[in-house]
Image 1 (cartoon, rainbow, N blue to C red):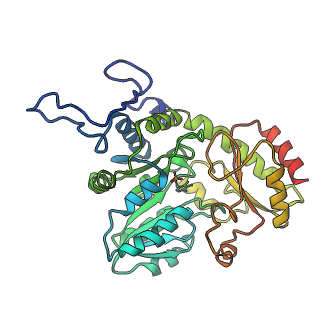
Image 2 (cartoon, protein in one colour):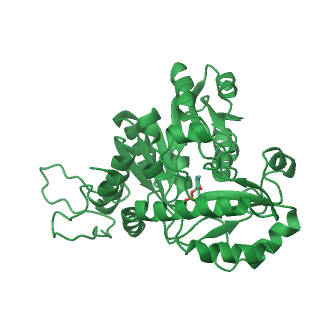
Length: 377
Ligand SMILES: *Cc1c(COP(=O)(O)O)cnc(C)c1O
């Protein structure tokens, strides 16, 4: 079965007990023991729930992994995944990761004795040099946020494997439709399903998928202990969102490509960042490891005031954090996602006060371009 078919027919398309095409939302905290002498799959809903199981098996299958786990948010998935490490362990992470991932590593897990080194992961030598005897894992995100920097997954994973590290990849921006890190050698994939997988800006949820059963058992132990589980209702919304993933991303990334090309023709715009652009650094690597360029891009205006004026003037895009919904969202990293980062560090990474990130939704692209043109003027 090809990907689009698997989004619909994945073993959970028809409820085995009633024939329902919609996955039942099982709202219960506990499950009565039906036969005191027999093992039973479900007992308490923190440990397992049928709606959650349907989502967990679906994402594991789509990512090509052995086991999937659903959490209350992307950060709960990432935080719980990092919970498999111990005091004294060390991880190497890309410096260009989601702000919340950076925060939980540096403000939380460091206090519990986890060593963290952040490197420019587009430079494979920098990854190699940061590995110590105590290093257990490499944490990557590509394309990065908000400048769409590309990390060579195969190259980085080969370095990790040489030193016996596991590789964790945050695949939120592309989803398994466009990039499957496990097929490239990664051990764990994490997601904010709040974004493209859910796809409708109506749910906060996270997922983790492991390449093998053993890592699955480790993550399950944290999921069941921490208890940062996804609710059955949110699992249902995510299952529903996943069914239209390909249709949405096909339309959204086609619009993103048109918008990137159009932005490049504008005198008000100084730089455009989108992996499909010929001059984008890492484009060739991206083309080898992904099946598309995604629906997130960013651009720079001439100065801070012009960026702020633009954000205030657009009509068909919400000025907001988040991405991946059916609605186009424009965000201002300097004051939103990267506000906690010292200005000097932000500027070093290229996240200037004139940078705007766009997550392209399902509006008609001609309407969006007309709106952007007026807002830029
Ligand atoms: C949003 C996001 C997260 C965090 O997910 P939440 O669902 O907001 O907790 C993690 N990684 C990336 C790349 C994200 O965009």
